[in-house]
Length: 605
Image (cartoon, rainbow, N blue to C red; front, side):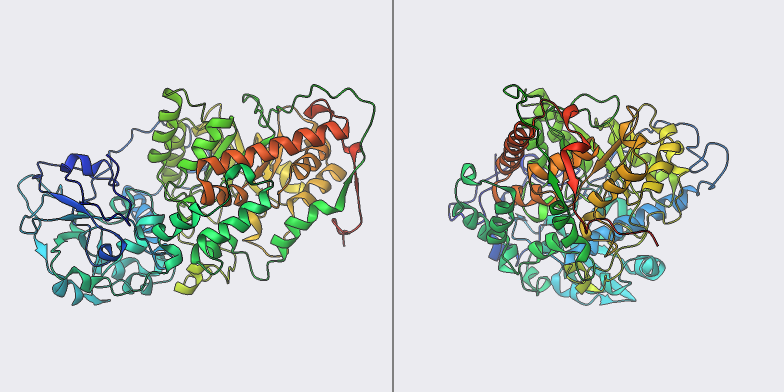
């Protein structure tokens, strides 16, 4: 039974608690009563706490072990694995940053579930006989200082005083990041952009001290919600869009997404955020204009084959493209990464899941399994990995990805620190220079991480994402990587970093053997907006090309139908381009089919 639309004026339905929980993230039910619940619209939702949405506890997953699993990045030497307490702390800090940092950037108008019988106290899983008290809004408001800080998320009251005192220096933005929500309800800001289970991985059980008494709970929500972040408003804007079949190119999706999210909306600003002056981002887009085609004629091209083997040992892709990892699909569409998974499954394209996804891996993999078992397509997935400071945390994440069916690991290496993103909404919350999901990650990695990853993921291609020079591409190959992804993080990291196409040209000029190997793949992303862009990269020797923002814009406007339409557009442009170039297959695309104009690649000093 689906929840009513937030703007609905009909009588709210009556549901059992077990029906409601299937719509709530990460909920554990232990002998709860079954009071009537109702669905609130955006206005009332901001004046009531979600007292029913009680976070549960994730079951720990038994991890596969391998050489080096306890000692760091190498099998016999290197970093010493941290203690279990340190592991817990690393996870705590990583998740804490996720819990609160992004929250200042976006609001939400999702419907929330209200407990009509506010007199009941509920079992929160701290023991079958232990009940948590109801806490009044007026009492919660008193606890808003660094020495006494409570916050409310999804109807639950958490005492985070000790956490702030002990770990504030490890949080991006410092204690102010949490204290801005002291004595308040952060649900509206927290819910849209954080995967389920984040709280459970962040705070110890003792932090959960009660649930909100819904009487006067409006006192906890005294911050304004940007209308551009109201999903009900966005839904109406989507209805006014032209039919998805009328979209003719990927650039139109961005303009339409601006209509849905608002040009000045925080979500749109987040999607468009770049490093510093945006030079790297702009050059990503313009770089393809420095290559022009040299088409061959009188070649039989009635029947062509656009399929490609993008990574050694993996099945061929119907097109030489994939969905690059891009954070927070849920910022643009309420279904989040599910739209990408559905669109990829419907077309056979590979989705590389972002570590900073709006949904948890469990939620994405559940969608993947549903699609596959219902015969709606094979959802091919890779996983983008950030290496944590504690190798055990990294290993756990790798194993979770493999259990879910990911067939390749893309290790991101171009983010030891966050680039300066002045137009990122998170920066206005004291997060300049810090990214919510990055600081706990390892800034001291070396190429030794590659054999270690291979040891914990045997037989799985390891791809190094964020390579910007031919020298590093060669080092990755020598260390045992199955490939590299040439990328500058969409122009969001080091401004004036070379566009990946320029790096690809340099590899073709200085180390062409890397492009011709059957056991090593050079992939690229950033700035791709046309099928002709894809073909230029393939002519230079790339095995596959990724796109990130275009798919985010497409799903923002039309959900999975937008993703499918974007792929159809690329397919059409790739096939037209192949025929006009005189290429019957991807293998026929050669460097001789393009020529380099002055201005893309600089001179060595």
